[in-house]
Image (cartoon, rainbow, N blue to C red):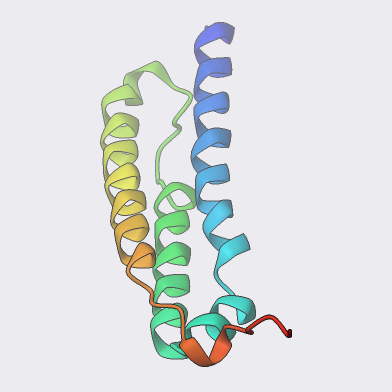
Length: 103
């Protein structure tokens, strides 16, 4: 049982690290680069909602009887992460944010 719990914990850590990477990228720097404050803020709100998917489960994810429930949560989580990736990769860098080198 301890090995199963260890695998579950490592998968949770991996999943939350994936979401954490979005937080590192999305922020004031991304707003400055893209000029798309509303879009970046919408992506950040989506990141928060995805994180709550894991935080707010109403069952014990470590209990073997809940393995199917946890699997369903993780399927939804990873679908949302892929959606976030697609959405965030569509952000366009503003040409006014690009600094040209001086001669």
